[in-house]
Image 1 (cartoon, rainbow, N blue to C red):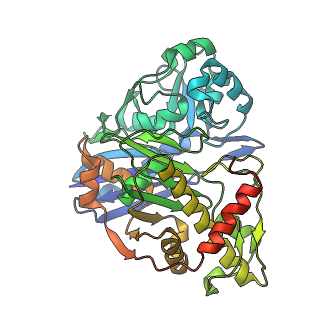
Image 2 (cartoon, rainbow, N blue to C red):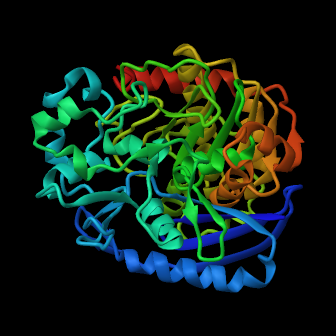
Image 3 (cartoon, rainbow, N blue to C red):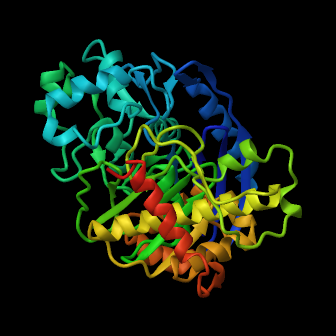
Length: 445
């Protein structure tokens, strides 16, 4: 038996085939291209279908016992189709900001719902601008591919529907608010729980409703019970965890997906992260560095403005302490990211999340053993390094749950490569100074 997960990323489509014990049996990938023009960011949805078909063809020799497929994609990416599912627009990507000015109209339609939660690049502002009549259909990228595999239009899932305006608490589209906006409710898809069977391929393989890529990575990391968290560190830092109750964040920095097994998946995405390394240390061989703690920290914003663990459009990168070399600068950046991560967890716990018990580290930054240990020391909790933590693997785990418990399926399939225990941190005073500087600049409100 085997299950396949497919990840529709920004730069590529990736597919993973996993066995019942979690072993990766096969992988395939195909590149994708995007068109960027100022604030606009589009893809040709036919690319997704061609890339997925190519990945499936490559893995075909291993799929005789294929039991199911699930698909994830970037959160907020969608296109409009006709009633039959044929594209009538390009795919508008998750970070396309062409309709940012429409956010104010959406908030005016239902301030209690959207004043703090709706963001300018979410799907709904673009949908408001593009939808012209009730014959059109809003289709998220994962749903478009699922429909291709199943041979007919399919429902979406609660995870992909979030940034389209779906009310996760009520379990319905907010039709009263849509009426105020002039949006016909018919254009929005049926919504089902992740793991629900959507249809079958021509070979009879079930296609299951997936989740967004961040949630898929969380499943792959096995962080699916209260107190367990997944911290994804790449260009930016993204945290995902579990809470039995919905966390209310009046600042809008934290938002939550529904847990497939019940409860919530709170988290947030920072504008800080490892992306600043290439800007401040261009051309430097970072692998050759052997960093040590330094009495300096760089707030590692990759661009102006912060969105998590606080919302501060005016936030700018800054340095505390003396930087005398590239090695010092490197160490100060690593410390800055670890400090933002610690502050994010403190913010989440302050909102009512369970105390942090373990953190699974994923993303490209995990290649640095020094950084992994620094983060464990700064957080003061054990950190786990999963064997396979990419979103495509998470979708293979979701497919293997076949509508049952994703948490129990992950316990059986997700493998941990190693655990790093925290050591006493020598940076607590510097962390306090860093937080005090954020407050002095008015970034935390």
